[in-house]
Length: 277
Ligand SMILES: C[S@@+](CC[C@H](N)C(=O)[O-])C[C@H]1O[C@@H](n2cnc3c(N)ncnc32)[C@H](O)[C@@H]1O
Image (cartoon, rainbow, N blue to C red; front, side, top):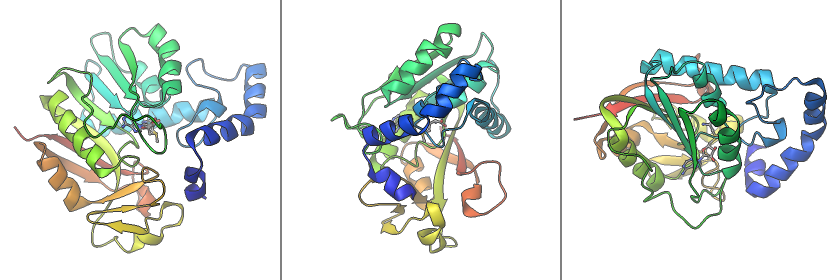
């Protein structure tokens, strides 16, 4: 099912979602049930189009995972890569204090514009940037993420994180993003990202794992589909450590996610990492 959904163009998926959720969105408007920072369901292009309460809860859960794994503090300066339509940012707006600050960037303009016009208006220490980069699932721009330089200074952030970003990027792009994380993260900072990971023990099993099957095998990684390469990627744990080491990063801990059928605090696999110097 997921494979067919990803096979549609970004515009087709957007239109179908908009139409499908139109009645529910109309009802939410009439009843006034929608939280002011949560977009209508038809605009939630990331993950499932949860209603307002669920969207807020998912963000709260992401915040709690960040606190639990990455020592997130209210006064931290944080970078959210692939900030989407503000799911994590909404929760962070109730946690970061006036000494703390948030920067997010994303390749989908709709999400960035929504966040800047709502949350960004009320919280001047929250900023969202649109970066027009190519991603075969989200943006058909010519500009590649392989050599994109993050629009921030070196050593700027206490925490850099991404939820469900590196599951939607290609290996050369991820390599570049590791290089950039290593540059913008403070020496004593921490990074947090979610992935689909595997090793010898679960390699065969994830080739046929229901909605999250990775049948296309490549050197050190597997794809859900060869047609939509950013649809979903799973990376071998050794390959990931090597890619990080090449950019002066090292794994602090890995927590397997419940997509693999284990009990966990997060659906995807969590990797907490830091600079080696
Ligand atoms: C599954 S969504 C997750 C969004 C958000 N992190 C959340 O948890 O709600 C993946 C996001 O990554 C963004 N994205 C994809 N490629 C990107 C890139 N090269 N740089 C920054 N963001 C990217 C997509 O536009 C999308 O918003």
